[in-house]
Amino acid sequence: MATLRERIANLVERAAENNSWRQHRCFNLIPSETTPSLLVKMCEISDPAGRYAEHRTMKGKEIYFYQGIDFIREVEEEARAELCTYFGCSEVELRPISGQMANEVVFKAVTKLINRENAPGQPFRRMRSVMNNDLTKGGHLSSQPMGALFNYVEIDPETGKEAVVNFPIREDNPYRTDETKLEDLLRTHRPELVVFGKSMFIYREPVRFVARIAAELDPPPILMYDMAHVLGLYGLFQEPLAEGADIVTGSTHKTFFGPQRGVVASNMEKGTPLRKLWIETKSRAFPGSTSNHHLGTLLALLLATYEMNAFKEEYQSQVRKNAKAWAKALVAYGVEVEGDPSDGYTETHQVLLRVRKYGIGEDIARRLEENNIVANYQALPDDPSFINSSGIRTGVQEMTRFGMQERDFDRLAGFTAEVVINNKDVADEVAAYRKEFNEMQYCLPPEEAAQFGARLLATVLPNSDYSKLFADNLIAAAALAR
Image (cartoon, rainbow, N blue to C red):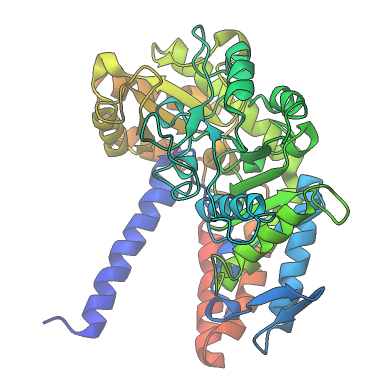
């Protein structure tokens, strides 16, 4: 049996090889991922990573149940303030540790809200009806009955299935909502919760349209926008809280610069009609869904939000320009792209490829990966299921952050077309091209970041000699990576 050192050496070598491939030799185009900056990663291994800071509001005061948490309490308060600035909102809940948990926290809170006025002895009920996007039409898994919505919506006695109604799609463009049919569905089904947001996401959601109709219903539905995929594009792409949404959820690690966490945002401050929903949201975050809420990633989220607020406009603008350039270049090389060419195929970071004539999506995605282009296969709206899918889903956000601009996506589109259309091996050429984009943008440059990283390492590691060795190697490594 291998010794502990041998096992560690083997694991470290495999991890280092994976790092080298993902960070230096391949183009990551998966739209639900990003690489955090060096300092965000360093924050994740700081001392709070092993700590607890449970707290809740009791009799108007925030009560903490652990000692030694003054620093992380300040971090949480500052992160909340920074995110309120980012969203232009009054309330932020940070304790969900994923976008899916953020959604479930809201589903729990809405369910608690609608039962608040129950008479004594009246049974606790689920939501009578929920509207969301169909999973096979781009809807996000976490907003489905098989996902986080499970157990929070009633069963329709006529169908025997959950009482969920889907946004209707247009016949001429299945990525857009049919607003005429939508109005009829809203008035007929009168959902208690409307969930906007998708995972296959290229156009805006009809928030203003639904908010206008919702105001005419009694009681009006809660309007929730799951922005997991487009959280880092908040404002430029869409600003739901200003358009009539009551609450926004999301994950902080797709288009946002952060670690893997979740967030809930709203304007339900004291004195507003839905303040009770916000109180329920906080209590469903803790103690309803979390105990330890991963304090290392909380510290990292604060630093990532510094970066987002500093570079928001510049980054978002480049992402949109890159996505449109990527789509246009793919079409020029003969790859079929979903969406409307008159508006550049997309309004987000995502570009959707239709590849059925060359193979099923899963096989094409594997061929692209073998050629150092990492994307994921995707069922398109006319596919019956994810099995034998017709599409490839791509996103430009991570490579935008590594410095790619519009002109750079033309060459990548050429490589992609060679793989998809001609089944050609271009792995070496792609790896060589990736070397041109190895310095992260929209954050501190490596020399400055390494100095701060060294300061963190010097206090995390167990003794001064060990710390100095690691810190010196980190600074040297950052210099070599340039």
